[in-house]
Image (cartoon, rainbow, N blue to C red; front, side):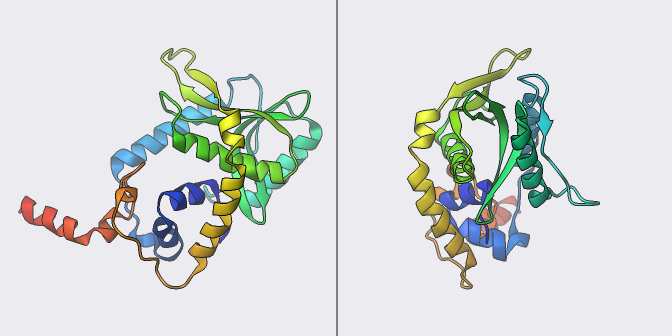
Length: 227
């Protein structure tokens, strides 16, 4: 299983979550409020694409679907890097099939600065790890990344995009990403279901979408109480 940014972040929270994504995805339950938050985040990210003016978006869908064609996006990104496009959105990269799409790359004199957009009032640890995964993949593609920013949602709704410099924190995690990306890839491929003890990872930093599967007793208790 190739690892994407989403795979990595879910696997870091709980390796069993990643295993279930690959082997038993039909058990996944996304609560409506969580889906609403994800949709709001996507909308914020779409609007942020224009924060530096004109841009080129790399998103390509597989014919007749709404699923990204990652290989086509990678090739399109390569073309725009060669052209020296000033602002590239959803810039896609692969390394040993591990994949990421950076929200915004902005050209500088020596390469590109990277911007990860989050519909959040502040930067948290998850955002740093998220950006670090992307930096790892992009660096292995021999693209020079200078500054790295997490763009958060500021108070001014007329101009809500607030870049926060996280360069040092992100680049310090390069070796940690390297260690974990291969570990998680190996775990996801094993045939036997991973066994994990119930713990904080079930809810932190986000409630697992397989919570009901791993906590069947709680689900039955809730049904009994409602009766």
